[in-house]
Image (cartoon, rainbow, N blue to C red; front, side, top):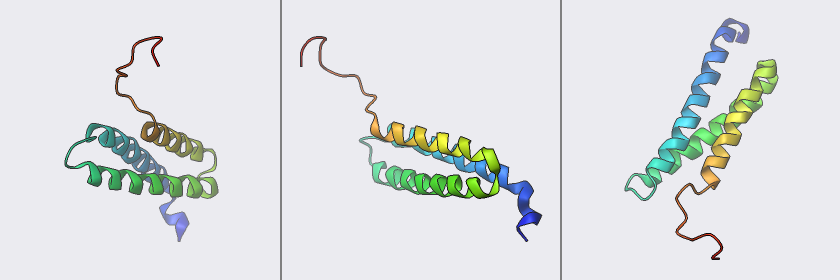
Length: 93
């Protein structure tokens, strides 16, 4: 049964990765806005979906799971890093 849909798996994997990167960007753009909770929920859903795609890719797609793992890493870094300019001056802590 799964062999009939094998041609769809790479396309689904690419769509999951694109949704993950888009949700990371959207979460940063909506920071402080009224839609922030919705963007965070979307980001967490995409994070879970990308984690599941990484685990499924290990079993089903051979070496293509590495792209999903890389996207997962980019999503985590974009969630943790603060990209706003720092108000501090050099040498002042």
